[in-house]
Image 1 (cartoon, helix red, strand yellow):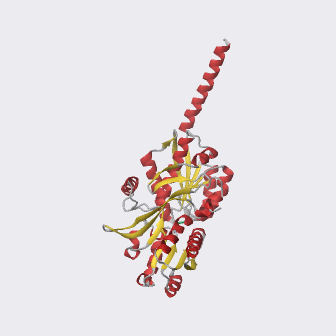
Image 2 (cartoon, protein in one colour):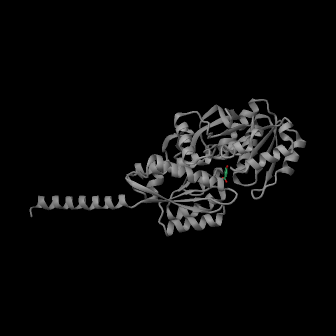
Image 3 (cartoon, helix red, strand yellow):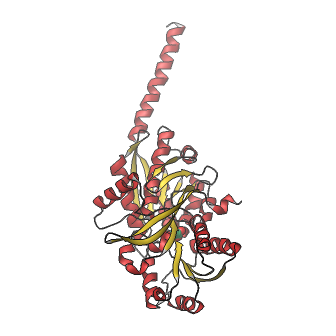
Length: 391
Ligand code: PHB
């Protein structure tokens, strides 16, 4: 064999081996371990995200960057010990390339160390305490942060003549974030704030609402996690606060689209700031809501669904960028700076913090035809998590 022939054969051999590898890689699915509360008090979050993940695969197909996405769904029932155990099993036994879901802050936090040690991206689709993305360099978030949603509320309240606010929040990460970010900004503007915190498990709002009723503030700022708003609003009415002329304000979790019809007319007039409303007026959102409702009759997508849908979009975009390489380091690098048009509007993953940069909308709960909706009437564009932005 001439030297030239040898070199050629060598190159061909390498090329053949590479393409055989490529074919094998393409056949091997990229597994996503999706851990959600499908049962227990926060099952509405699991149901919404699961439906959105399925919708993404139905609309966009399962193959991205030449690799097929395979989702393995596990129910942690909202229990952090279960989340940790399931995440560990998904990494070790199922060899997932991505961990995703995480319906509550303690569940996302419980998985951070596993993500770091296994170098597996943890896509947080729901949990929203600001500090979560600092718990591991492998955490990336497609939901929101409570300070991101709550600081614009302080600006709106002060600009609209509200001087005295009582805050009621659930006593854990996101509630404390909501309270401190709202109060910090509102007091700096000149307003006064009184605050109470309500337990996460089996909350009874009545004694706290009694204090609000006696304090007679201009507005009641409330954060409760998605799904709990109906119970809060029921006690709000029972205490007569709807008739006391106290305005209801806060991040949008309390008037979540999943339960808004169930809450009923007592929610009318609430002013909230949030990153997603099913009533968001864009062609992309109208198509998203229509397809979601067709696939899930009787259900309206809420902000959790959009976090899940965009989480899948992020994994798909990253795989496209890495040309199908699902190693953790490559994927997380590709996720930083990714941007796309979401049903909520334009979004981008902050390459520095791995949080999502997005519009925050000011909305009023009102009737649209026969339905209740959170109708957006002002936009604060491209909001970063303010806590990290100040560091
Ligand atoms: C959270 O636990 O981080 C969480 C849960 C539900 C929400 C917001 C934040 O609506």
